[in-house]
Length: 345
Image (cartoon, rainbow, N blue to C red; front, side, top):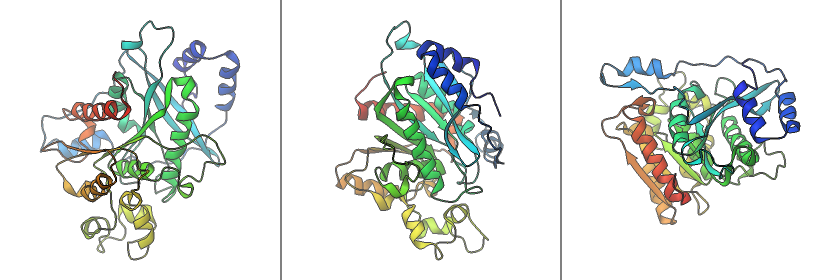
């Protein structure tokens, strides 16, 4: 396990907190964490090898940390039995705030990685987190329980716990607790969408534990993630009878015929209501990965909920891992949140 409190974190704590709070954090991080094998077949490098033949101009987006962003890695946000789930926190530290004695609060974004609900890691969203932090957002790239460890709705519980962690640490990290968004790509986009449409629904937030800190988000960015598992078009891909199991079936605990109610419940489209927060959809040129989006946007528009769709032309799935596509993705996210949160960076 990496050191729970790195030197960069210690410096930040000295600058931002009393020695008492720093000591408490050090004590909490001393708990040993069980190592859980993680399927990491879905990485930027493995995806690059698959895509470079058709897109020879692409490059894996850099995760080199600029001076304007501080990284606090491996922060535990919730404990399950004998292991912690962790997040990497990216903080804007220069630019508009350089030299200020009082740092203003800033919007935050919880980033959820993709990988078919069974693979991938938070490292995949490091480049996006850095570029969003450069725009003035506090970003948390999080790990969550994959289907190889725990089926649906465990991942939903985890992401809501991460949102609650961000809100409960708002004063420490200068976060505006009323401006927290969730964003994700592919399976992470579907999860992010479900997080938003289930604001305040207790059955999707089993780890609340009577906490008075809300897990509600004020905006959602779904990047190439499904909105509806139940449509015939989606089930042609996600419920193929020729396969022993599909990625969706493994996560949802069975085929559509076996788990019809679960497939419906896990569909963000099912839960759209007047309480749904604003949504931004960013899609590739591969329609199959964002099926259900048009129906979901139609329901939101009928309810007067702000929603927007941005498509990046001639792009493959997982485009957000690569340049030149990451920058327009970050542009779209930042422009949307500036409008929704009425802030400028």
